[in-house]
Image (tube, rainbow, N blue to C red; front, side, top):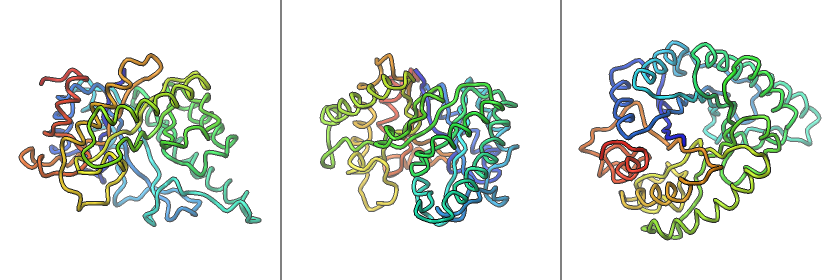
Length: 320
């Protein structure tokens, strides 16, 4: 069982080298977590751009990653390196695409995948040099996933550079459209499944919805014979968050630690003992950790000092 947490997503250039980052990582380890998905972003200008680039002002550097990997190792953590493409226009990366009816569509796709390979191969080489424990070849690239031959080439070139296990991170509900999951070692997904019908749902009520998700994911395992891994999962400590676990925009929702704790409890109980299930990378644990005295008023994803952290410690084996 991978007992994981996502770390680093809020980091800009230099943030992973700070004393604040080290302290946050230490608190993460105290939950009993044994893995981190070290997640960071690079950019393209819009969902229709063909060029992915390193932003020297904000993107974490290779040196930042070296520091973060070293400090995680000192704490006994294993690392999945997870480079992610974001779009500067503010649209979700799942919308990256090119109109198939365009006469230039083939060229657009070729140019984009060429740029993607350059981007992902660089970090595959970093993953190999740092001897990290897993590498993520892509995250929620929903409208590119039908390009099977292009993705198979991505995986082939990554495997030539990095010799550890690979995962691809699909999005919840669209995992079935990834026909090439057998090319990687884990079927990954962002498991933001809505498991509540109304604010304040109990863990038992959510468990019923998770059982339906479990049936679907077990069939995916049977199809590809690859273990299922929640590369992202979580919900905010806000009333109604379990109805829309992916949401980060509705800041007017009142704080609700119980709902977040119920989400954690129901997911952990549902999947923990399944032989085909490989674990969790909860979303997320920030580099810039809030003061624990503010936990009861914080409505973000992080569980530091919240009731969901106590649930997580029960399963992960951290001190209670």
